Image 1: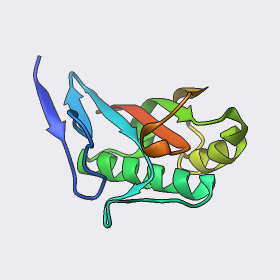
Image 2: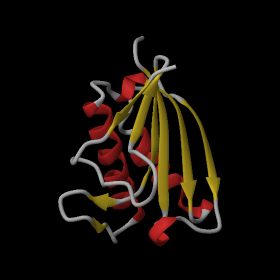
Image 3: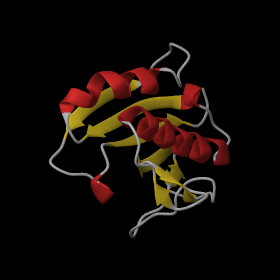
Image 4: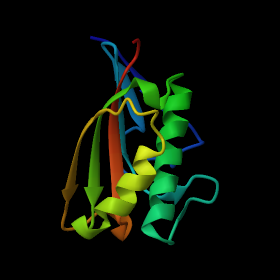
Length: 128
């Protein structure tokens, strides 16, 4: 098994012992992203929709670095600070796909890094 580490300055630097993404065996595993603006390294503290847009921009930057698109995404996991945010996050999240949506689960958790409201991780297939 070989693996390739994917990191880009266009997404937030990892805040722990992990990488933004790892490519292996035809798959790309993207670590959970939160609403940090990579240009300033500051957390976006706006509405949950603004947070979600930043999360999706960060995920897109990592996909771009791996020369992939949201069309390659086969599985996502969305973590929310409160399930009452589901509709707003879902609306923004869905706007990044062309209707061919990946498999997904959405869960509410007790807490997320930096007290954010949303974190999203992805798995993408390298070739379709």
